[in-house]
Image: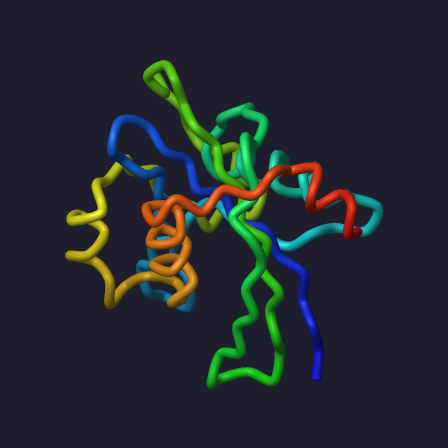
Length: 149
């Protein structure tokens, strides 16, 4: 069984969450900006790179939401996903994905209700879990993550 280390960004601004629209296997899926950790990267470096590539935003995380384990039914891989919080104080402005992979179609700022309307098209159940964890007040200090790496 293969284990893949991934990162995901929960970016919040005034009750809205940043979601990326991707094309995966010919289907439109919605996800937080996310991706795999590359060799030599720390988790936060990977997160900041993925956020920039998928949204064009250059931000630093404000907190860690925790780690989740996901085993999709259609693959033998196991994903360990570290989620980070990015809180925006100012409007996000106009931003566009840099997207070297070419799979990001658009970025959206949606409320929880708008995301719920698209729940069947979320990339994984971890997207919804991450939003619920955030709304429940989960915030772990970034230094706690570094202490355990």
